[in-house]
Image 1 (tube, rainbow, N blue to C red):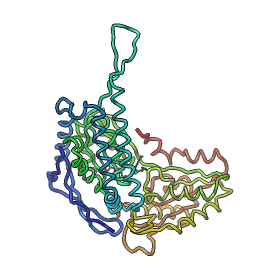
Image 2: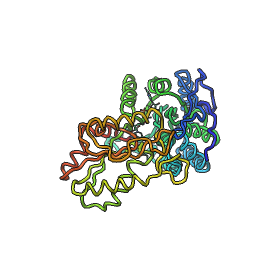
Image 3: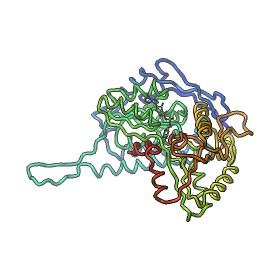
Image 4: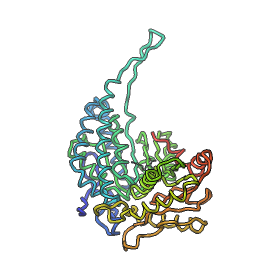
Length: 429
Ligand SMILES: NC(=O)c1ccc[n+]([C@@H]2O[C@H](COP(=O)([O-])OP(=O)(O)OC[C@H]3O[C@@H](n4cnc5c(N)ncnc54)[C@H](O)[C@@H]3O)[C@@H](O)[C@H]2O)c1
Ligand SMILES: NCCCC=O
């Protein structure tokens, strides 16, 4: 059953604050296309306040309140956040499913992962203490040398919508463990659970300003954050195009960045596999999270001798995928995140068709669903490497299939530089 979406403000300096320009963005439930609430829309004015709060938190009491206290102290906060997330798991999973369309079971796994990630970095924060001031032996007695591990400062964390709270946590937890203070800017398409993370931080008494959360549009909130002179580092996950813009603005100040950018991952199926298992993994890899995963197995390379049989099995799997409202029992494929993504994916499919590919299965909204941004699991064959569907990231439930005859050919196709440019450039840090 759906639950109400909490009405929240921006989270700055440990408090809820209305955006300076009082703007808000509607939240659209992708299953029903109905507005179910709204989120605050930060602008440069709010970025200013959040960066100032983070900077103050970093230096407060000469850093003894957070940045230069013990890792064990910070770990206590991370563990308290993990415990609260676990306590609120049923509600957070529902909110995430409502906000981004992810099947409820998958949203619940993600919330477990979120709690696990805070715990993991709590362990690392504790481990840091033993690694401080370790002497480094030098060949000269007149010098002493020690290793000091210090946080870099104020960090900007900009995240996408496909795993809203998990992608945020992959950045927030390590930053806080290291002693940084942070400003998180989640995607405007799915910010609800990140705002709940703010409430969790408030409830567990995270020192004010250590984590600030600004929801808002990319150009209005993300861009001024990325280019702010008092932000010491940017960690970004999202599309290659936006990542490139963020890097360019960071380069003006020679500011370090970590980038996790788009993906277009191949899966290679050789002739000696267990066909049923390989078919199950291919389908899971491509359609999990409604096909919106950077590591989606969206390019299937299958040995020509088993291709017909293998693709038949994929089609059988696809026929049995339950497509429904993500909160419905047994849902395996929900809607894509937004109207914009829905249109974009359908355009990819129609371009593939006009370029000569065959839409073997799916390719449209399921007939039993009249509303919502639903797209059937789609299998495309007769693809060649110059087609857009092969080269570009679709980021939806679309699998394209190509056969190969030798291992070398399979590897060459998998490594095709055009297809894989995103992967090659998105080294995970
Ligand atoms: N490699 C990975 O680990 C990984 C993981 C998840 C998602 N992704 C990628 O993320 C993409 C989908 O996410 P998306 O559509 O939210 O990506 P996106 O690039 O559109 O947006 C990502 C974030 O950047 C913000 N943003 C937009 N314009 C900005 C600007 N000019 N300056 C600063 N910030 C700006 C957005 O508001 C959002 O918070 C896909 O390409 C997917 O492959 C990659
Ligand atoms: N399981 C998390 C994958 C994140 C990439 O999209």
